[in-house]
Image (cartoon, rainbow, N blue to C red):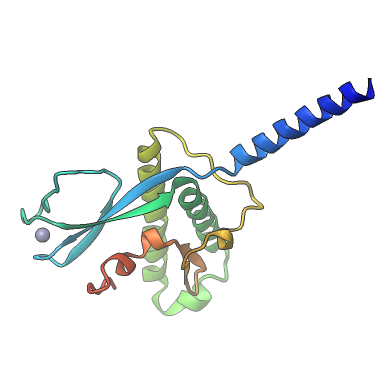
Length: 173
Ligand SMILES: [Zn+2]
């Protein structure tokens, strides 16, 4: 009898472990950086185009760099960035460091906010549906990559969102 209950516990244990693994399982995807040598412009796309593509604006064939991503990690970090932006919007202190350009500052926050929303939309496109973020205790530092923190806002950019890593010769500022 004790043997049976041990087995049951063992099964429950294994199930819990499996669920835990599923909760923390990465979802592989790709982001492609597109560089137009004529316009010197950089943009990203979640769409894979094996036969290449041209820049809509000028018709030039763009250079491409594919970056493998963990869709869930990208999504989770983006959500955290949005949360941080929400807090900044709410904080009355925010104009303190943005005061000289208060209006411009708010506009900048709005742009950053829109960029996060857009990025998550693209990530959802990759998996064709909603993305399950990692749990709160998940630490982005567990990713073995160069995370870039945008100071003083504290937003975090993964490698996939740092185009200069993929096109070092292009000044993306
Ligand atoms: Zn172009």
